[in-house]
Image 1 (tube, rainbow, N blue to C red):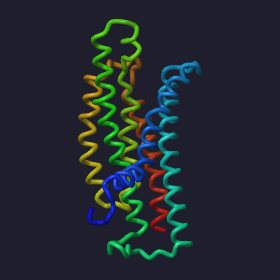
Image 2 (image 1 turned 180 degrees about the horizontal axis):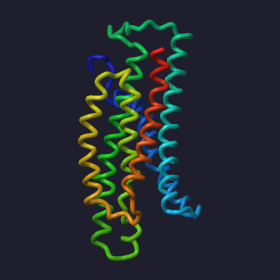
Image 3 (image 1 turned 120 degrees about the vertical axis):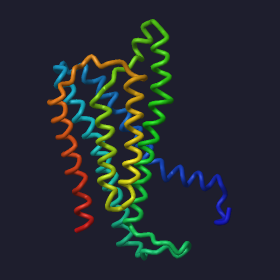
Image 4 (image 1 turned 90 degrees about the horizontal axis):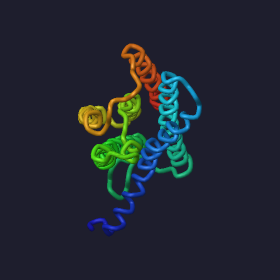
Length: 232
């Protein structure tokens, strides 16, 4: 290659660059499954189960973002205090400010999260739904999925939170987020109509809407704190 780095080494570097965000997304996918399993033994009412799962899941996702931001702060403060590196890449002649670095990381996290939605919807849940639909036995009832409204709403809220966090560092991120969330609507529509069966839990529109708006406000408040700190 022109930079003197072979293709295998470039793929290895790319793999390690995206590995933290792949781990965050996988963590956000698997831990709520554990929450759904454990809450069966807590003997809550159906309405309280929804609220508890919502707040546990949003707490999980926001805490993972908090850990990521704290890691960014550690890297930036360490570089500024100890490395004494100017805001310039001498090898390539390109700017290498900490704002640019953080913007790149939010781009990566947003794209990995969106690609994961595509992969899970079409390559995991769709075959699972086809198997459950064409098999009439206990196994098909075990793998059959209900449409969990709260989970899909949280997916959109999480994407919006990533957009709020990264807008200051990556000004084009809202445009990309608008396009990807537009496609996410059709991904969720496919998941609702094809991959899932109607949920046994009835959602009251007014009560659910107020609850989701509270979660959205909480996410916005937490997302704006690091941005205000960076500006100040």
